[in-house]
Length: 317
Image 1: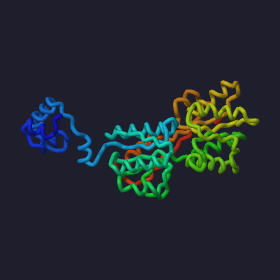
Image 2: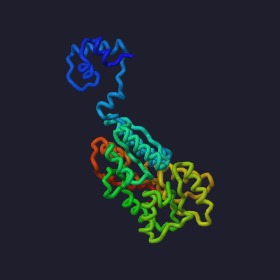
Image 3: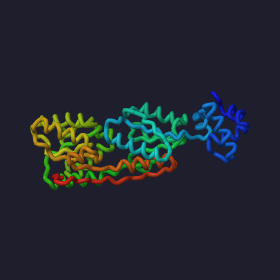
């Protein structure tokens, strides 16, 4: 296999000239460019991208740490990051963590090894104290509110919209409000925001039998609805943690020939539009674009993104 020295020898130009032409990082005359290109084609030369990355100090790759992609929150956020990275000339690698702190630390070690130009944590278990130790090796961005911690972040602002939803639920006089959630209160900022906003409006804790955790998609929503239907007093309103989840709940009630309670989903997915279910849009396309820009610019900023309540026509809420 030909290398850059072979190209230089066969074309009659210096290694430096050939390098400038191949890497597009300096002036090369038209005559030299034509001669070098002929040799490249004749020898079927392929540039050593690993060596080039080492020489430029860039991989043009961003690692995206994601617990799992089955949950629409993470799949939408990852898709928005990938789109923004592609538009900026970068590729992304999904680094699945399953909320395993040791895996997350390994991804930080890979940043140390220069495998990525930066890391974006869509969610994490690892402590911020540990992340701070790796900041010197490259940009790290978290997709949640970090307060004053000097790590870049961008995130959806949930509390204002959640309070708006629970205020509407209260005004409509719903009494038995159920919630489907991803993780338990102690492990998830989103779960904490949901329950704290409920308590702020209703001045009491939600009933434990109305809270179901570990809900990620349509099938989980269906099983959560089976639980609700079995209760002596089923909920009259369901606050679902995703539109596909709300669709699963809806389908279960229909399959069991039960009246479907009022509900709201999240993420403004196709399911909510087709089924005319109200939803909350967290504008993850904007969050993803912000995250990529923070990696590329290496800025330490905290960028909030407002959420939006979308009330579908004809819905109780």
